[in-house]
Length: 440
Image (cartoon, rainbow, N blue to C red):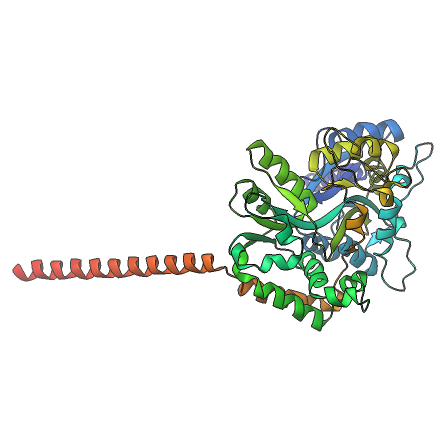
């Protein structure tokens, strides 16, 4: 009896200690390779203790698909304290009441979330479910953003040939284009091309096309992608940018951050890559920090979000991952304005305000106003999600390039030939065995 009592007491104490430890643990769920681990993440516990006098042990985990992260929270009720989903998932989480308000009462500490660009704040407010009256800034603070466009190798591709997305249909690009395996992102670009005439006539806006998915729009996007099937070398989530640096493909419809990574990596091996946004338009996307409904350490989570908005940390993260921070402080503008590195200027007044009309900025990271004005924010597909997935599966299933078809056929022939040879060998061995047996 005493042994049983001792065991129960030990289990109780362990449970208490674990619960107490959880109160001083910050569970972060982020995209892979999406933060400066050494100079930003690892230094948060010390900074937090300086600000609050409290400990904050970090448990840091990564995901590669928005939906898998959402499933863990929505169905698994995982107790992550701070998560970094994309815009359409933030919209869905708000609709499904899966987010807590961010506590921005930091005492004497500056509220750095106020440094988020007014442009990014306007984009985030578009994530509020229609008719909800929700102030998105109460629940989500921007982290990084960018555009979707075409990474291309100018040694093989003339920019004038692909300024219009329709250029990707040219037979001379057979088997030379990688596509992101992300149906919302690709849809949001293609739908603007297939409705370019309606946009020009003022019959529909880019924002409306991207925000409201219907059967007709899905069908027209599917036709474009099906017509393009011979040119598609493959569907990728992350490896496409690396293939571009090796010269294995000529183009990749991809995100601006991946484009910057590929451009930098390719330059190191003497390959030049460039990036452009189609003239018909594209999507401007954002990821942001939120506190899920089942979080256990909301105080540390709120402080972490504030910490990530500090200009010095925003710069470190941009330098590490190659995406555009939403922070628009004078320090960020000074960092972005580099005449030695960028000869051309961009109008970034939409992002930084007055005085940023001619900035020597990297235009892969910071798109010019003229580019942004033809972009729209991606949204959740709502009740059309199943139809979008069905379309995507049909396109990918029927989208083998001629090169891939030849490879598959050759592999099939090799397999058949191997099977025939094996069968003949077995028959020959059997015949030989029978002959020997008869001799006996």
